[in-house]
Length: 289
Image 1 (cartoon, one colour):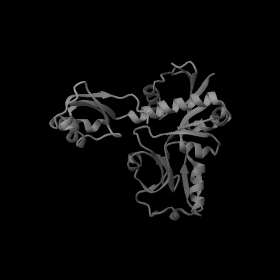
Image 2: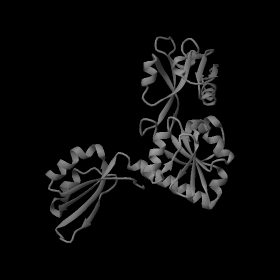
Image 3: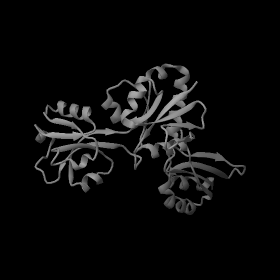
């Protein structure tokens, strides 16, 4: 059995390959080929633009693919959603498709754009957004550099953003959010209905989600006397309740937990002050919830 996995080529490519590597699936790419091998003999990869991923997954050329919710909705095609992967090009968060206008324009709301031209790569979603508001606009497909279209080539744009910095650099002002999107694992419906392929796809999703949950977190192990345990626990943030194990010396226990890496700088000195000993901070590859 072989699973063909679609990895987004372009802005999400590096983040996706790093995530796959942290999950344990190493992808070996060749700059001159869209095909890639992996360290799992049952999984082969294809580098495909995220905008096209749903089409190839729906048609069955790919069994499973990593793409954005935005491009799935834009395609209008029927694919199975396996899992959400909340990461983006620059961050661990979601992205927004926003309606933006020149900062010195008189437009304040979407209704002000009635009869105007809006440029975007996300044409179908944008048309639906304005139709639901009963606003008549001319939505034009933008081949790129959408931020430079207003005011000469379009009155407004719908563009994706993580931080808004590119829009501000082009003197654009956001007036509404059209869609909030995140990365997803999507599967071909026939592959999803096949028990063997579904198990493999679910295992892939499990490991990817585990790698995401581990990102930015570290594990902490420490020893503490029972009489000091309550004070230690009071300063210890935890992903869930910490694991407490009895040591060979009944007066002592071992505590194991997970914290945000950014918190370790402040937490470890506080643990030491609370009489914890043998404190060990260690990196995490995966946290399976």
